[in-house]
Length: 100
Image (cartoon, rainbow, N blue to C red; front, side):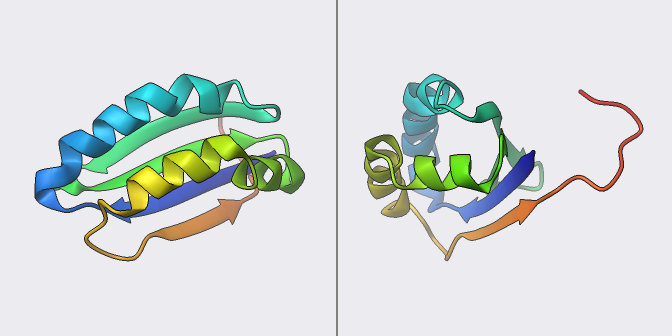
């Protein structure tokens, strides 16, 4: 399993636009082959800073999604809303006390 965290900082007046994009695409992302989980988080102290957290079968599944029309169309609508450069990390679990 591959866990993916993407940090995005939005223009404050475009947060609602992004929330609408995420709401419209979250179920299609979750149903993409190899995706096991997707969620959206934000910093309580900075609501314009948001993170997507997703779990993928492996790097190949994530890359297939990143090459898909779904990703391309979602990302093209999202990136124009940014106030800063996004950051992304792909991680593998080392240890866990329990699963969610």
